[in-house]
Image (cartoon, rainbow, N blue to C red; front, side, top):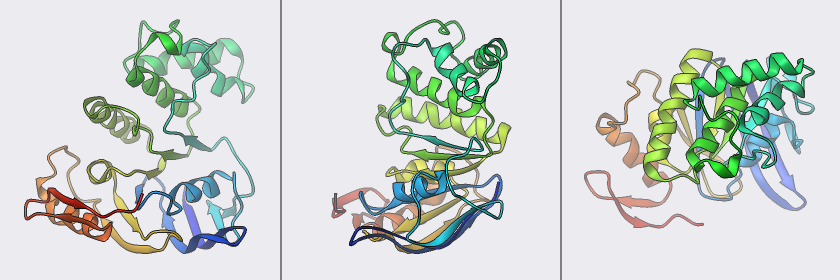
Length: 256
């Protein structure tokens, strides 16, 4: 699914949040949105999901104006948002049951997807009985089970520890390679953006304006980011974070 932002502006009352954002996310592309907290990145996801309406301009999905939520576009939050009274299997199956898939078929698909995210054997556990990383794996299974054409991901691994985050980045990268959805990812983790994205868009403080885009489609997807040191330094510089010659953080000047 092609996702197009056609000169989109968004205001909340008198507060401008997004200022003239124009971009096309092509089918199968993963684009990461990076910028200061509160600059309007999540608002762009909500516009694409159909949860908000633009003040000016249009969001298009395969050439059709987005007018509300649709099963072809799935929003994934930082928190797993699993229902605590349902097992992992039932949580994942629910995504299909909402689309009127027969329960037996939905549960079988859910079982297969839990296995694909390495949760085989945990189908009948409840969210509180498993780790945060396992809950987020279940959330990924729930996002993919209905085979959406577009994934809109809002800091999906932001609440996890560093090692779990790296592991789940690998899982997500593998699932994307297999399923080929269009992905719009909001992240504050520059390394995560560099590892996952085909393209990175860096925004200014609110209202969100594009400062620069980085095309990474031809770079090998590996956690060894030494080949992207120059891009990392420039992204951090645009975000107001001073770095030393090796690209390590030296001073944080990014507004919260």
